[in-house]
Image 1: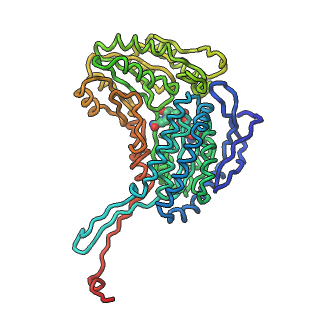
Image 2 (image 1 turned 180 degrees about the vertical axis):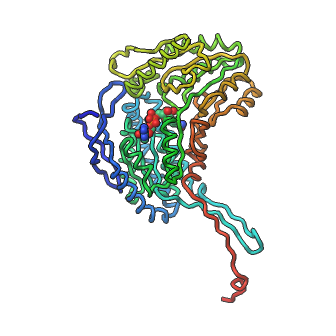
Image 3 (image 1 turned 120 degrees about the vertical axis):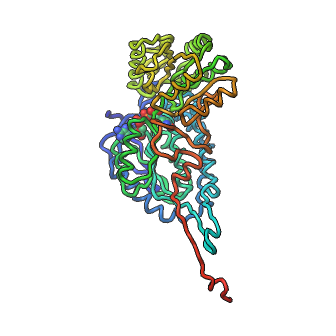
Length: 495
Ligand code: NAD
């Protein structure tokens, strides 16, 4: 907790910007420069209560607004986001540390989710069957739940709330966004666009904060559904506490994503793609490759090529042209990552490319770690199991695809697994057997498009319905079944 002269960001509740009454706040730091760029309030439970009450009142009218009218606000939001695309992307770079291209990719995916949610009049339809018994018909209708909320992580400040929010309100729910307290600025700017939509007050609300605000969301009786994205320990906590309070809950957690390289892979393409996966966004993607498992003769060629790619990656401030990788989010993250690299070395791995303590000219205070490669990582070592969430790729080696798949399946997480090969049969075997919810075949970041669910498995996900697409529509609606019979007498009545 520190004091700065920077203004404290307001919340957006019931259609109004309002200053938080928080007694504590945090500095938002640009990770490349280590300079404070804003101050975020750690809002108290009362402000969650205000947002939840406003959302509950707004729900009564919003759920009666026809879906075709509800989506008109989303069409307008898409236009405004397209107009502000450059500014929003630059804000992501400033608070989160990505390169501008990475930030633009993120914003594009956020906008795609708005576009897909505009299909709600089709996606939200129910089903029916006439004559389930003679003269009796049955319908399944989807109705919104009420107030829902998202608790978001730091690594995609623009995109992740959009895996949920557009679907939630298009389905007739009202909504609260709680961004990561480390990167609140992008959502602040997006809510300035939301403020221009003319939405009824209370439909969309923004509450900044940390644990106190999260716990208030988890316990609030008006909030019916919670989406969480973040680390696995917090995902487990959110899932249990929200479920114990009777809420519908979906929690996407951490990851340790393996990529398998077969000897028949196109090595140039494989190296380029896996380097982007491991080091893009400074390794702070939940779909970042973290383990590369070479099979048979792929070992030497791939090891040499990926070491070369790691050593030559251009690291710096993401707003500067030509930069291929930015900093990690905080100084604490940097020291944690560096300690984990040391742990790998202590456990017997060779630090083939060492990215610790780099000097980035002009950004000496920034939270930089250069791409790092650990070679000969033992599958049972801690470093092979721990989510590093930084630009560190661990190399392992096996002799067969079966051993490689067994290694993939031995992990506690199941967010993503990828295979690089030119064999269709190997690809099918991998797709069929790998225990992960997002599979890449010659793809390094197997991120589902907005119209597919973001399908983590195992300790990468707690719940059953994921974010995006039809899963989001199911998550944000409850089904109602109507069984209907009309008497024969009515049929024959003369008018
Ligand atoms: P985090 O778990 O620290 O924080 C996520 C959210 O939880 C934040 O809004 C934070 O305010 C809140 N929070 C943190 N500690 C809390 C506590 N004790 N009680 C209540 N709320 C708390 O995650 P992060 O560091 O912001 O994000 C990185 C993590 O997110 C990584 O583990 C990454 O793999 C994961 N992630 C997963 C996915 C996915 O789709 N599976 C996507 C993006 C990120």
